[in-house]
Length: 369
Image 1 (spheres, one colour):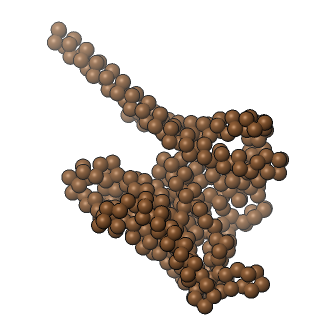
Image 2: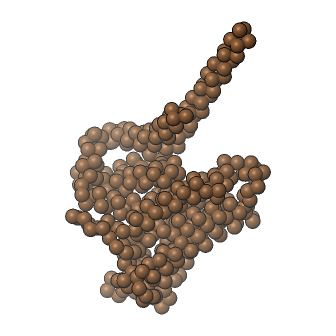
């Protein structure tokens, strides 16, 4: 049994390693074709990305990427593609900022209220896609993409002076009212910049994700539906109910994505609030194979590549080369996982065949005796 667990762990590690190596090989070929030296570029990335200030930047960037990956992974475990994480976290952050800016209560109360508001808004927005799927058969891919656009429209409508927005005439920007200083979340001071305190909440979210999906009956039902809806339904699991609940949980997790930016950095929602993190979460979840530790590694890798791109730009390399690396990794992930999956199945079949052959040989010897 121990040997089997070890081999399974090695197979699980092989896919992301092959994916990263595949991405680097493709990038190296692209650099060679453009007349650039690939090993020097990789050395620059590693050197710049390992600096103290870069490490802080990577941790702060990886925090929302990690939460976005968890939100996507909840859907993936059910074979649901929640493409709407981007709209869910932006809408959640907007209304959470509006609620937080309108209150003046002790931070110990206000911070949980802001976080719970974000989770509730994200869950409600994602629930629309779940209800449409179980009642009208609308694909969650289509509905969540459309909801992303609608989220931007809703934010644009309310983020106006006289509604939920406040215009800064000097900076020519519109934002929600700033959060009171008492609701600013703690930071971890370093020799360079500060590490966002919301990284602690992200770690807790990862533990909750692991426990719920791996150690509870609900998680078992969720994974059962993801593998076979008909078998799960035959076992007494309500597939429609699980679809809606999964979308709600995914949306609630998505609501946390923008909290590190809101509570640790900007303290308000404006047109400069970061976008696109939801789509990054898809790549991170794929790279991490829906495992909380793997997702964390994927988030750190993505943040490292973004930071390292600055080092390349300083040395005359095209900054877009990092986009090539990221795209190649995503493509290699799909291929690598399929190759490893097929190898694992073939290996198990050979083991079963060898065990059956050995059992047959023993049985023949006993009959002959």
